[in-house]
Image 1 (cartoon, one colour):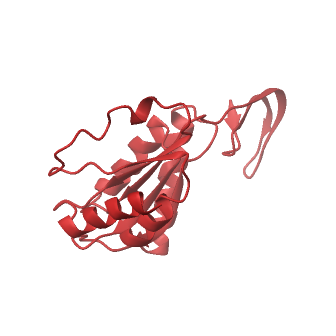
Image 2: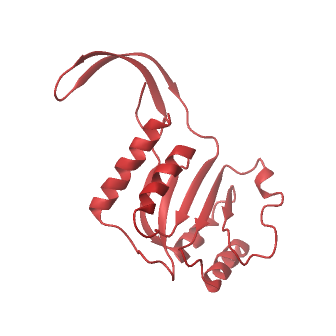
Amino acid sequence: MIFDGLGNSYKAQVISVNKNEIYGKIISSSYKTPIFKVRLYTAIPKGDRFEWLIEKCAEIGVSEITSVNTKRSVIAGFSKNKSERYEKISIAASSQCGRNDVMKINEPLDFRNVCKNAVANKRLINILPWESESQSFFSGKLTSSSHNAANIFIGPEGGFENEEVEFAKSQEYAQ
């Protein structure tokens, strides 16, 4: 089985292999992408935990990851070398678990800008788990068939600051 990373997979027979190429014959093909897309917006954790996060998110079907810069972010971005490494991890994990597409890894963005853009599409569910939340966020929202994607926001190790959460809430209700 081979895939192109865009939703197409092929059952193929290998005909020949040399140092630089593999030749094969496509026997059958199929196209499959998730009906419901999940986008993860997360502060980059310390150490190599971001690599682990990329691998696990690709395995469970997350569509894309965008790192966000928050007030308590320890790491604000990543180099071109890191970006290439993260892409390789995503490709390997996507391939290993049988996905037809590859989870996209976006360049880091500012948390406030992401919040402003997240509310524009009403077919999206925006989820921001927060340890100080007093009301049940999930009641009824996840059962609606009118949604086709979810944005999930995960803060840094120290959590989101109160003003960041209030800003995110204000954007949701401003629309």
